Each structure stands twice: as structure tokens, then as C-alpha cells.
Image (cartoon, rainbow, N blue to C red):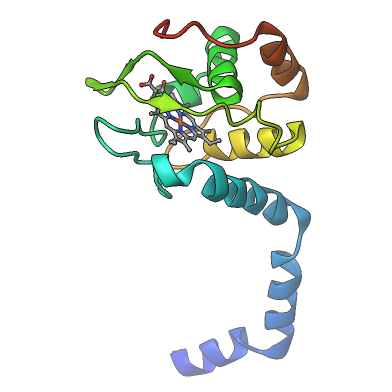
Length: 151
Ligand code: HEC
């Protein structure tokens, strides 16, 4: 079989333009927004690949909390992201005692941006949690800040 011939036919103008069309569909756009927001607001500490830095910033990659569909775990996680957290926690047998800033409270992100960012994390780097909803975000805002050291 002539491979060169095959490659040539795949890269024909028609194939390339339909690929371009595929890449511009809204679903691809939405997930890249979540990624952009993550890069702007979280990656400086938790790192672009979500791996964190041992003993300084906990990993968000392959983090069981982010794959959990349990409503209480989701509430705790949303309150932590909205209002920040300090007082220490343990992830993968490593102790963390830094300060997580109140990203959702300072008014830099609106609720749809916050949801995009959160749902990006819940479906990236080995996490596979279901998408959280506007209603869950509103409940978390109502409940307020987590007690320091309560995790
Ligand atoms: C200035 C650094 C910094 C930034 C920016 C930051 N975090 Fe954190 N984050 C921390 C620290 C430090 C902790 C651990 C707090 C502690 O030990 O009490 C933490 C903890 C967390 C946890 C808890 C992890 C677990 O397994 O319990 C989550 C989730 C989290 N951050 C998400 C985010 C998200 C989402 C963003 C961006 C919107 C973000 N963080 C931005 C420093 C940061």
C-alpha cells in the first residue's frame, strides 16, 4: 500500500477545511475558557498541570475530592474555592499549612466563570467528577467560609 498517497488524500483541502470547522465548535471553546481561567487564577500555586508543590501547595490532579459526586464533599470544596482556606490539611500523606486566597469572593470572577474553572478542574488531570451546578454554587455562597482547620 502506498502510504504517501494515503497521507496526501487525508491532507486534501476538503479534509483540512472540515477539520477547521470541527475545531471551532462551541464545546471546545467552553473547556478552553475553564483552562484559561485556571491558568490566570490558580496555576501560579497549584501549577499548570495541577500537580502542586509538595508541602507548599496541594495537588489538584488525581485528587479524590474533585472526583467525588457526594453533595457534602462538593459543598466543602466549593466553599474552599470561593472563600479561601487556611488552618491546614493533609493530601496524599503530606501536610499543608499555607493560605488559599478567596478567589470567588473578591469579585474578580463571576458565577459562570467560577463554574467553568471548577468544572475544568473536575474533568482534568485524572479527575472525573460530574459538573457542579449554579444552584450548588449559590448554596455554597450562602453557607459561607469554612472554619479554619476544619478539613
Ligand atoms: C497563592 C496561592 C494559591 C492560589 C493562587 C490558589 N490556591 Fe488553592 N490552595 C493554596 C494553599 C496554600 C492550599 C492549602 C491550604 C491549607 O493548607 O490550609 C490550597 C488548597 C486548595 C484546595 C484544597 C485541596 C484539597 O485536597 O483539600 C483546593 C481544591 C484549591 N486550593 C483550589 C484552588 C483553585 C480552584 C484556585 C484558583 C481559583 C486556587 N486554589 C488558587 C494556595 C493557592
